[in-house]
Amino acid sequence: MYFVFCMVTIVAMKYLILGFASAALFLGCSKSGSSGNNTGTTPEATITSVFQERETTTTTFEFKVTLSAAATQDVTMQFATSDGTAVQGKDYTSATGTLTIVAGSTQGKIDVLVSGDSTRKDDQAFYVQLSNPQHCTLKVNKATGDIMNSNGLYYPVDNTGYSTPDHYPGYTLAWSDEFNGNTISDVNWGFEAGNNNGWGNHELEFYTSSTHNAFVSNGNLIIEARPETMGNFNYTSARMITKAKQDFQYGRVDIRAKLPKGKGIWPALWMLGSNIDAVNWPKCGEIDIMELVGNLPNTVYGTLHWATSAGLHTSKGSNYVLNSGIYDDQFHVFSAIWVKDTVKLLMDDHQYLTVSTQDESVTYPFNNKFFFIFNVAVGGDWPGAPDGTTVFPQRMVVDYVRVFQ
Image 1 (spheres, helix red, strand yellow):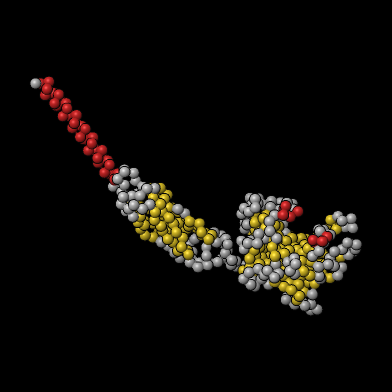
Image 2 (cartoon, rainbow, N blue to C red; image 1 turned 90 degrees about the vertical axis):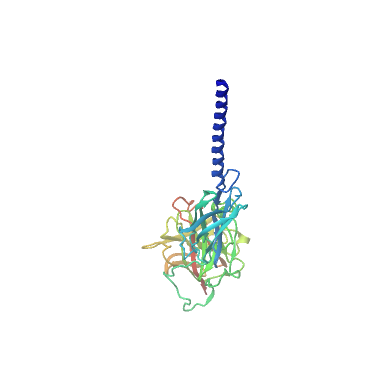
């Protein structure tokens, strides 16, 4: 009897212990189930960042919030925007509230309105923060709204600096481009594209005809060098020419421009002989009205190139150094006074180079027709490659080009 009683007591205690364990297990499942998922796993929420180009009118940035699995009951979380370099009320409309993802679904969205703006400037950012999740956990609780401003077509420029008149005694304005339209004139300008084996100088840029690299704004032409990959090259820019559209023989040329700066940056305002396809370079002649190497931003160079009677390249050039400041500070006017047998180069009406038939009487090519080239090169034999000090983008701004005859 005593033995039987003990056995019954032991069995009863065993089942009592198992009962407590089962109850504890049941309570643990119920606690997990309160997250809204009967499988015992809590869905994780992730908010995705948005990178979007800014438009001229108000647009919507749509932030997606995704659950790792559908919950069996509604999931909620709070959201709120905050400033980065973008400012609420100016660049975007602040947004706060509660996001609900209904049971059975795995995705919701938060819309933020971004103000329209056509100004080309640095990209900006704001943030969307999630908090206080119900029936889920937050895996990624903060997203960035990247506002891409770099392709805007309005670029305001301070107009201070040297200027020249729109008429001279004894001259008539034969042609000009004041860049007052909304687009670059295809009557005046074409584009040379690609890298063309470094254009003979081991240059590093890929030239395009895109408004990313050349556009008109507020009465100015902007040529912009950018750090972006295209055609296996790490930089893009633009090279504009008037070849087969506008060419000239003699006159006074005035080009008002602000110049970029930085190691490896090489802007140029220049001319080539219109017969280049027939006789090649350097026999066709080259008039470099202005060149600058960006690590010497207070110095411009003027050079004329041609071929000797033996067909060898030769040149004559000089430079003009500012007394103070750099050529990026304000506008300056780069000029050529070009008559039969003589070319003179000027900076803000200060003459600093003369080339004539006294320098080369036999093969002198500068009595022929020439066309314009405006470009910003990156890298090359003369300026070298950009380095860690070079800031991008870099822009050459041209107010006008005028030819008086």
